[in-house]
Length: 176
Image (cartoon, rainbow, N blue to C red):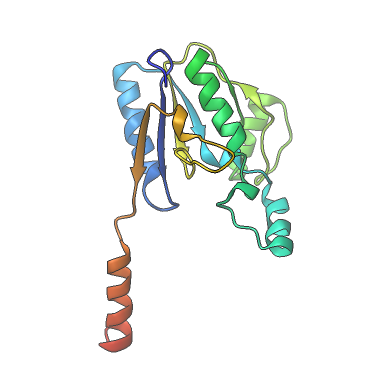
């Protein structure tokens, strides 16, 4: 953990609201003149979109586990940033717009579903801000959480009890 180069991780399942929390932090950073290095969790997938489809079909792999993600690289980044304010990042290109933006910036020709090359984090940032699924993960091989100074877990507003109630009301009570 680092007072000089803090690592903040906002983590939660898809659809839980991590992007909304990220935007709130970005407004705070702008208002207070804080320069973050923003890291997206999708950047630490092991496979491109096409490769992942093949792996899922052949090996019944999940997007969530260590076989599909580079927890080692994420832990390495958090550790490096906390120690020295440095590290490497890349982007997972979700859309044609993101691909165009990063291809223009980097002089590459990547397509949606692919990754940009690894690049150094810009120097002079005040903190590392991560948003994604695995910001606080601990496995037998990797402990990402040990490098996080502030971890924010986001849970969906609709919880399991509500889902069960909706199912029951539809199945047993005739509600639509």
